[in-house]
Image 1: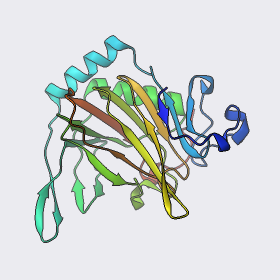
Image 2: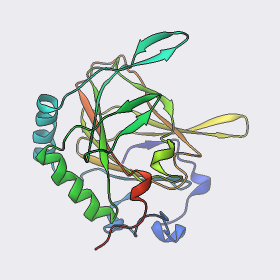
Image 3: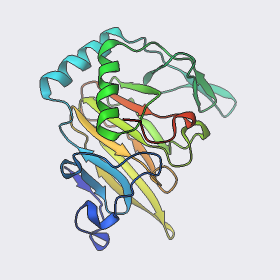
Length: 234
């Protein structure tokens, strides 16, 4: 795992150092030994090969060609500004999701994403109501600093993020004293990033623009809505 900015002064060995009562609303994770903590004091963990290369290639090709991608706009300084990426919200019927003042009606689950959802639920022992898919067509597409702290996600949301396509810098930051501390990650094609606990309250994250030539990237963030809180029943 390529991580920059992790503070060695915080280092602890293994998952056992946390006691891993990791998320109050989800059961303990299986296959913990394959997950790597992004930083000791950041509630996020990374698995570089959740999907095999061929599976990730096939999924990316299908998503680019089959999903109903749209470019939205947000109100800034009295005018509408295009969001620098394409997106779509896929969820169970009636599960709307709103952020940045935009309400998203759910698109139906494609078969391959439904199967991926089931695999993630088995892996995390948690249920997911939907997935927000973001498509970055070039290095000019990006997402700015933010936390996924919408009320409908609950107070300490669990988010499962699958990366497909080109590797792009994914950066966390946290204010410590009067300065920002940053931790960088390069999520691989087919990788899984889990965020939980205080990761959205104490930290912000972003996908910055890049001037270097890069291919397309799709990010799938599987989300639970407040009504889904609680461990998934066996």
